[in-house]
Image (cartoon, rainbow, N blue to C red; front, side, top):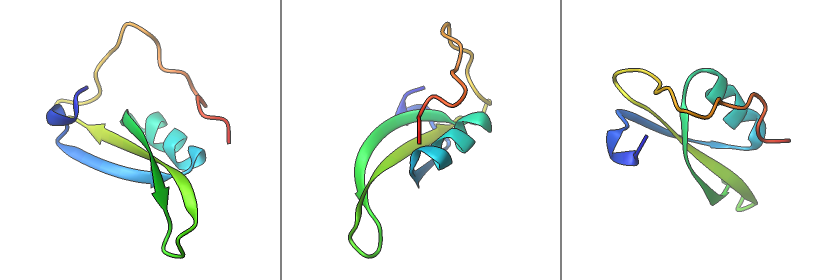
Length: 68
């Protein structure tokens, strides 16, 4: 999925939250640096969903892809 194809986009902090969203059918769009309200740095995951549902890719999705 391309960012332009996403009907909904979210950003989550941490691998655990990213894995939860991937299990719910979200697609990983980007991994970017982020910071919480206190200014502490963390990895942020940008995920998207299309209006037509999750796309089937030729490579099976890995469960628990991000170790956390």
